[in-house]
Length: 155
Image (cartoon, rainbow, N blue to C red; front, side):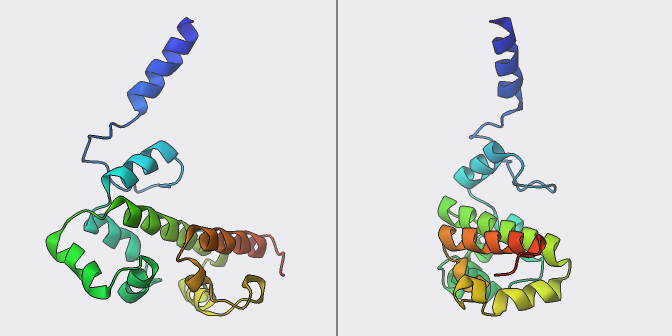
């Protein structure tokens, strides 16, 4: 019984509190700690954090607006008001950034990844990968294709 309590105590000590509004996107791999990522989604991402992610230079603000199903003006309002993104938008931002991160690992070059995102893919039913990333099922398809490319499996 003591072992379980110790493990629980360590876990409880390490887990961030939902009410802690200082949660932010860590500089390291934001997907390694699913609990932290879940709390971040719950609290919403600040525009400053979004800028840090979006400045990878792979997508334009219009691309981000399209992927988030927001108008360009609405996205700009988040910047002006410095308000936090709603959880649904925060989750989508993190999903897209995960695809971009994996894409950079696979292609190792921003220009190649940008080209791949904009080019219709036979393996993806001749759809452009960026257009599939508007929903979680499409995001999974794009991630699966990136893994196949990484392993030299071409459809």
